[in-house]
Length: 306
Ligand code: ATP
Image (cartoon, rainbow, N blue to C red; front, side):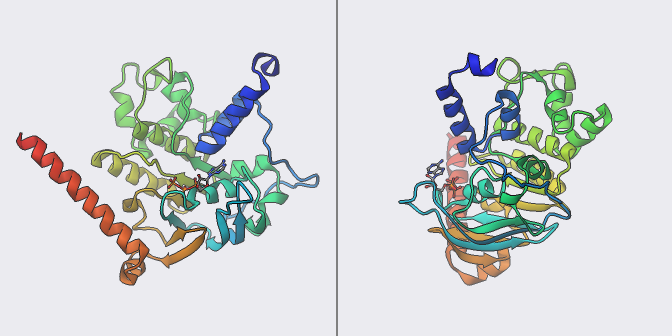
């Protein structure tokens, strides 16, 4: 039916948009039954996901052969640990998460989970082992409860509520007319970026995958929302192998390792304290961010005084 109703070029357009934005691909695949560009190997086996140790080894990648994006990147995310990727805009941070989720294949090197190359396992098993909290979550035109339960359709009402509690979104839901039964999405209540992100976190809590990819929203959030999201993320990433694609430095301070990506290579790596001592790129990104925050606060004070 879908093939008849939607011209193929539209599907192509939608698919590119989805892939580009790292929106919730699982939902959209389900909705549109779009065939992914990357296919299962003929002898693909289900991923035997244990604790979910991730390894990128000498990864080279380009969307366009004339413009390499990753030029030999190697790092590991040990099982249960959190690694954050930071770096200038366009450095290839989100690309790393796309390679782990296998929207694309590496051109050289490998990406493995518990020792298994992501190209050799079925996409279905790979994607069920990974929870993705994308920059911008797609919401269904349905109740907010349904949107959370999507993470595990068999979940009970108590489980949905518990997930919403951990994701710091239940207080917001309780104030909606109808509570968990309130309609959201294009034809219902519009949620802010921060609220949608917390719905995505609640979904992921229900799905309970061993691996988590957090692709932080680039948009600025107010301090309280940012703190709530941070609390939710800390809770959901506890004891899970987590790759954070960080656009705001405040979220990476507690990471076990921070990788600074620049011009397709790892420029610096270490904990927050290590990198601040190095007074390199990471430290200068911090001082720039601090100056920007101070300037913003100053502006706010001036406006308030007027
Ligand atoms: P930001 O912090 O701005 O989100 P990033 O470090 O996450 O940036 P990526 O999204 O990984 O950057 O993109 C790396 C580079 O690859 C960018 O220059 C981008 O323009 C380019 N790129 C991303 N997606 C595609 C695509 N589908 N086709 C061609 N080029 C792409």
